[in-house]
Length: 364
Ligand SMILES: Cc1cc2nc3c(=O)[nH]c(=O)nc-3n(C[C@H](O)[C@H](O)[C@H](O)COP(=O)(O)OP(=O)(O)OC[C@H]3O[C@@H](n4cnc5c(N)ncnc54)[C@H](O)[C@@H]3O)c2cc1C
Image (cartoon, rainbow, N blue to C red; front, top):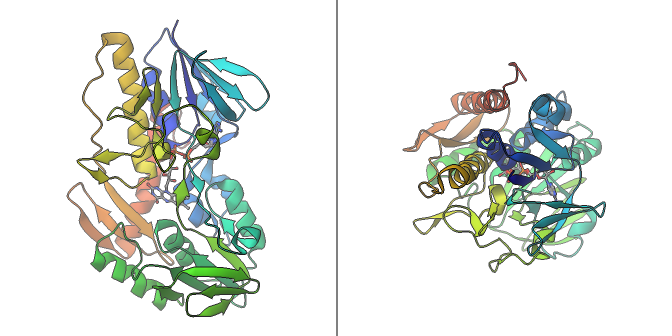
C-alpha cells in the first residue's frame, strides 16, 4: 500500500487531498499542527470590530470525519530524504512513499532597527487574534500599516472606519499586482476613507511611539508589518535543493525529487518566464494539480500535462463594502461594491468546494 504524506492542511494541502482520496488503496496522512483550516484571505475581515476569528476557521474534524485522512497534529521539523521520513517536533518520524510539502510561508521581516520588537504580522489566525487584542476600536488609536500590497491595503481599508490609519509603501504606487488604474482607484478610496497613504518612502527605524521613514516620521500606537513573505525557516534546514530565496527547486509539476512535491506558497511558480503571485487561489489549484499528478503516476505511470494555472481573478477588499481587482481569465477590471460582492462570493465558493471535496453537508 502506498503511503502519501501531506505536510500542511491549508489551501494547497486540502487541495491535494481531494484527488488523492480517489486512491482507494493508499494511506493518506496529513501532518498539520492546527485544529482547523484557516481561511487566511478572510482574516483581514476578521479584524473588523463585530467579526470573530472563529468564523474564518473550519475545524478539521468537520472535514475528515468518515474519510480515510489520518490527521497527525504535529509540526514537521525536517525530512530524512534517505529514509523517506518526515521528522516531527515530538521526536516521532513518519514514513512516506510520496510527500507533498504545503506548509505555506512566513512573514518576511527585514532587519529594520526596532521593527521585530513591536510589529504585528498577519499570516494566520493567531496573528489576527494578537492584532485584535491590541486594537481598541476608537478613532484616537493610531495604527501604522507598513506595506501597500494585498495584505497591507486590505488591513488599512478594514481598520479605516474605527481607527486613525497610516499606510506606508516604499514604491510610488499601491498594489503592484494590479494595473495602474486599479491601484490608483484603491489609493483614492483609502484616502476618502480617511487613511493617510504615504508612498515612495521606506521605513528605516521604529522608535516607539514613532515610525521613522526616509523623510518623515509619524506617531503610532499599533504597528502592523505587511511587507511580504518568505519560505518557512525549517525548509532551509532540509537537504532539499533550494533556490537563492530558499524555495525548493521544483519543475513544472511541482516535483522537487522523484517522490517529493511542493504546492502552495512554497512552490514558486513561474510560467513562460513570468512569476505567478502566491495566492490562496493559486495554492488550491496547485494542490489539486499535484494530487492529480501523483494519482496519474500511481495509476497510469503518466504525469499528465504541466501546471498552467488559469486564475479566475484577483479581488482586494478596501474600506467598508468596497473592493477592487479583476475577474475572468482575460482580466476584466472591477471596482467598488461589485468587486467586494464578488470577493464575498468567491469566499463562499471556496467553502462550497471544500464541502464537495470532503462530501460534507452545506453550509460547512
Ligand atoms: C492577510 C492575508 C490576506 C490574503 N488575501 C488573499 C486573497 O484575498 N486571495 C488570495 O487568493 N490569497 C490571499 N492571501 C494569500 C493566501 O492566504 C496564501 O497564498 C495561501 O494561504 C497559501 O496557501 P498554502 O496552502 O500554501 O498555505 P496556508 O494556507 O498558509 O496553509 C499552510 C498550513 O501549513 C501548516 N503548517 C505550517 N508549518 C507547518 C509545519 N512545519 N508542519 C506541518 N504543518 C505546517 C499551517 O498550520 C497551515 O495550516 C492572503 C494572505 C494573507 C496573509
